[in-house]
Picture 1 (cartoon, rainbow, N blue to C red):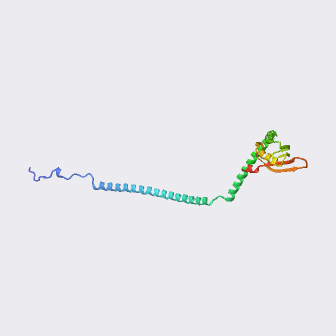
Picture 2 (picture 1 turned 180 degrees about the vertical axis):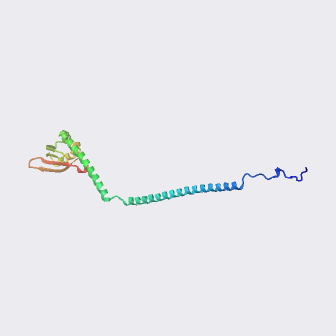
Picture 3 (picture 1 turned 90 degrees about the horizontal axis):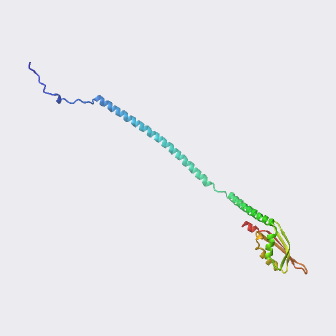
Length: 201
């Protein structure tokens, strides 16, 4: 039997079979769009949270700045009270004077406890033939010397020498009286008192 049709097309001439068809492509595009939407949504949510946190931090910063400014204004208004400053200065001076007075009293007590020996030793060192003592009275507050001098000028010279005595440091000679009776030597009485000037210095 003779064929009446001849097939001139071979299989190689047929178009290649496509693996990606329209339905699969549509599903891929839809999936990609959904993934992009999800990523965008997450990014937007994170951005919104970050903006909220930034807003809260800015509010806290504004509050702290306001408090700082208010405190600086309060500090600038709180100046030292002149009356309190003066009172503190007076109390410090009073305390200093009390300490000096305490030290001075301790020195006087030590002098009294030692007796007359150191004082008599120094009196002998400054004595001369123009002055002689008849009475010495010693306590914590003052010292009294009573005696006689040959001439009126003998007593001041003796007092100048007496000021150099170590046992009499801290005492100032406050008063001196002199009297001469008929046919009698010049009598004098020398009284000392605590040297307040030295104590305050």
